Length: 276
Image (cartoon, rainbow, N blue to C red):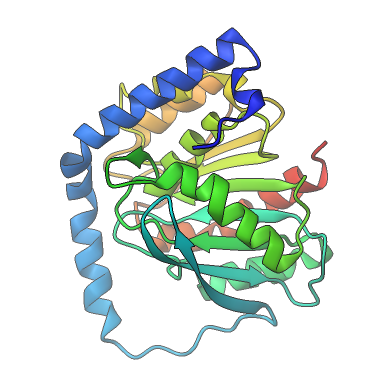
């Protein structure tokens, strides 16, 4: 793994990065227990998959399906890229990570495309990588965090001709945890970091709660008021980071996430537009 100079810029940041690595170990040990939270949701999604549904209206956005021959996760990985209607070079880039039991196409919903279209010229390009059940961490199963930093982002920037100085990262559930953990490994890389129903286990998210890990990045956390598992952990992380936890009606499901795509993309667009 390539070691960046800014990862050793200060003792405090270095110590926090070590703490993030410890958190990775904690989450690896708890994967089976945390995975059980999503089984009912996954079964429901599988049941709905057989139902006919109208095609998603992309609102003029262009969707590209690519692959990456990865040396870090040892396989050919799918990557979905979305560029808004009337898009062009030098747009900012949002990297958006999926949750457990989902994939790189799970967030291609009508609500997401409508929210992206509503942003007009402020709309970012979006990269949706595939992360299997990795929790987006570096482990014996693959260097998934490094994969996002060193393979997904460069590939997306090259293909889309996006602005390398304006990159944000966020995600849903497992992806929300991954977004904060990955950003903590590369301080200063991202203009914004967002977690939506982030799968933060109470008592184990403290290593991510050091604001120095994220430097100038604008930070976001939200969770459904009826989320069965992650209100406490998300609240702990928000308190440690001195940010507001958005708590809205809903559970840990697509009904909740789709309802707030406008808020999510509005946050990222503002942060990317004001990033220095």
